[in-house]
Amino acid sequence: AQKITQTQPGMFVQEKEAVTLDCTYDTSDPSYGLFWYKQPSSGEMIFLIYQGSYDQQNATEGRYSLNFQKARKSANLVISASQLGDSAMYFCAMRDGAGNTGKLIFGQGTTLQVKP
Amino acid sequence: KAGVTQTPRYLIKTRGQQVTLSCSPISGHRSVSWYQQTPGQGLQFLFEYFSETQRNKGNFPGRFSGRQFSNSRSEMNVSTLELGDSALYLCASSDGLAGSSKGAQYFGPGTRLLVL
Image 1 (cartoon, rainbow over the protein chains, first blue to last red):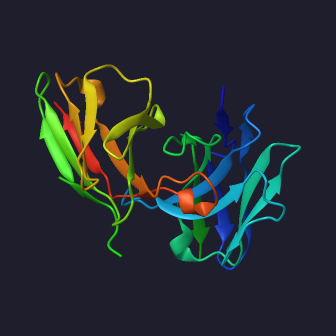
Image 2: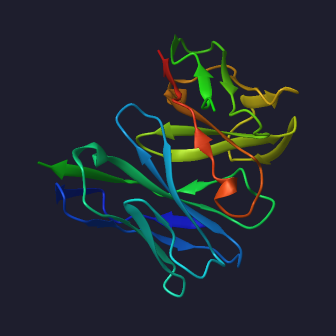
Image 3: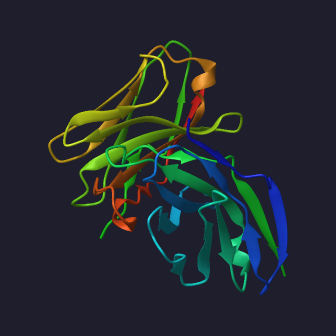
């Protein structure tokens, strides 16, 4: 069965420093997609970054990058130069192979607090 | 492009009542997925509709149902409400394609349901 594990319930980071949020996944499907979402206290889920299982390079989107280690089944999110507005809950999610595009499996989330 | 909209944003109901939540996807998106978020269970997939057909279903009782209209707008209905149905209900839309970040789901602000 598919599973996403985020082992860090909460993390602190100093403003302007980089931070890594951990995510490991389990699936038997060779084709899958991995996503990271940010959820501020308002509740809305904001899409940050995507990594496909066949992508050769790690995904990057501005200050966000994904450290994808396929053999270790990990997809860690790296936020560079943290800002106060980065304080939020972060979710790692997985979508399995073609056909199940609308179903995401989410981890339990990591609460990130950025300190000034 | 306008984002995903959900109405109402807040709702208070009593046990035994039924409720209907509405979701309007991003223009051009044909897939709409629904999720329930609670502190105890996290984010759980309810169902997905694509071109007016239910394409995926999560492990929820039959009291939870949905539908999608020809304009891709979707509604979710919960009948015979229970206290445990209190949650944030999130709707997400995508273009329904499996490959690349084009298949990413974009979420609405959610409907907070409180069952008394």
